[in-house]
Image (cartoon, helix red, strand yellow):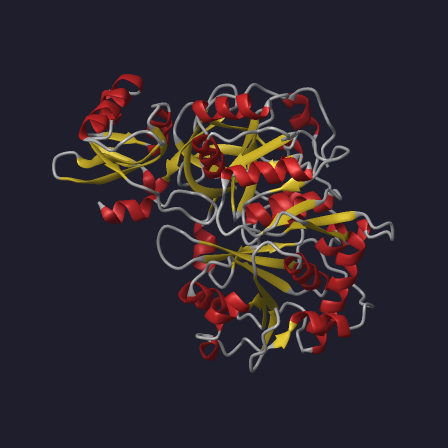
Length: 536
């Protein structure tokens, strides 16, 4: 979609969206590469390190078969199909089947508990779900409360009343299926996003959402695709970062992806897998990079071409470590489930500024605005807004017109994140609107303090929140995970506090420091500050 350029200004100025009226994700991300040549689509790495290879030809055929299964079982255009699986071969087969049958897929994180699962299945009115034995154990306890859920397809050898075996059903179905001629705006998937208050909201996206992701994926992966590219991310394919940034973004260009279902992220094991399989392009959330740094990983044999990261800002210390370890820059991105990848970086187009998210992605007009959608001057803090329309933006929040209306002001989608744009066009993340700490008359964003804390040699990870204070309104509290070799002591806490006073500002140092083994995080590696605030 991008025409490679030597500088950002030319790249941004010359870009034009070309969104066709008719577009289907299965056709674009699978069928056009299924030319009978056996072109590689997926390497699935098992626990022993072995890799099973699957071609686009195979994915295309298997997804056509499963589309016939869904159709025969009574699913019709617009019905919802839930995909309750980890990284696996089956996951993209189900999504592609749904897309080609004009159904709406619902990616669900495999670690969801019963309550999270029930809300999403009930709210979406899902008619079918594909899961494995682990998922079935949770689903079986709530199925009688899900009247819309008619069809359960189970992966594995188990047999349970009211379920069908996925693979036998697929193999017995015809491989002939005419993909529905969908419009680019037709619904394709619902991705649930958890807000800071209330129930999760389902962002309904059209088929065009994949096209909307491409300018950033291409720019921040240093003009993907290049010969020999091979993609991997530890981010679960249930989230927009794993599903669209990596899997579908790569497959649109015919770039194969490595899949692996790890029980938990192991830093050195990840390095070994990248070396063993010649992985060239990665989406590594900041948490993964921090864990690698903390573990002192060996990078022998790893030959990455691009590192794409987002979710939390890296800061200068981590950026320097990435450069020293991998020999390339980590390219930060910014977006959210409702409108993703609107800001990004590429060190060959403009210098990386530590702490900055980068510049607006070609095709996106990103501004700092107030709550009414009025643009604010450069250097002034406000809400990060994205001018509409653009193909990456959701159609709506599913069954939630009130929340949909609140997401917009004037010509802008309001991200709910506070930021600043400097005179050179770089964007700087400050905080979520509700993460801002008000202390002694100052409004303080936690990210800047966290970046400073990361510079201290004892700190592996940190999170900063405001806690109630009768005098200051809020006091700053830091939750800190220490690096190996450091013990949690009062003396170390005072040393860290003094370090922040000197490095940052006297009014921004944490008056309270608590050492912990781990921080509460989302599945995508974002710190759950609201949980820390609740702990006080």
